[in-house]
Length: 149
Figure 1 (tube, helix red, strand yellow):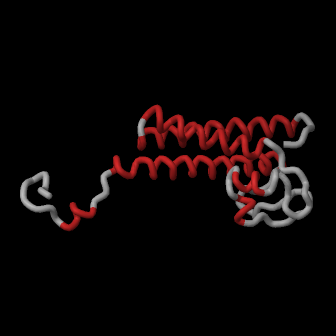
Figure 2 (cartoon, helix red, strand yellow):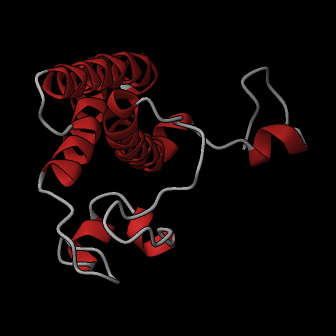
């Protein structure tokens, strides 16, 4: 194989992965990032209206206090595996948890499809940030009106 400058490829050029070849994997990774950010949005929307920290304590069931494990924390999949309930006390989690995560992942997917990989990733992060702000603001408003976030 020839180098763009002519001659043989250097070891660095031979091992370089073309971004176009990696685009499907990078896109999937960025969508996963969107889902994980959606999970964080759920945490913020639950804790901020209560005046709790978003840093600690670790995520737990509000009904029984059990710390959530790795399966519980998987965006969307954890909800489906647990049937939308706590694994210990069977308290319902609520349908909005996976909806927020799915919308966050969909924001990343739509932005990547619209703008391309890297501009789309930036646009997707902006969309997810706006979505997170809206969800958290709505939770604050609901809490102020006397409801639960």
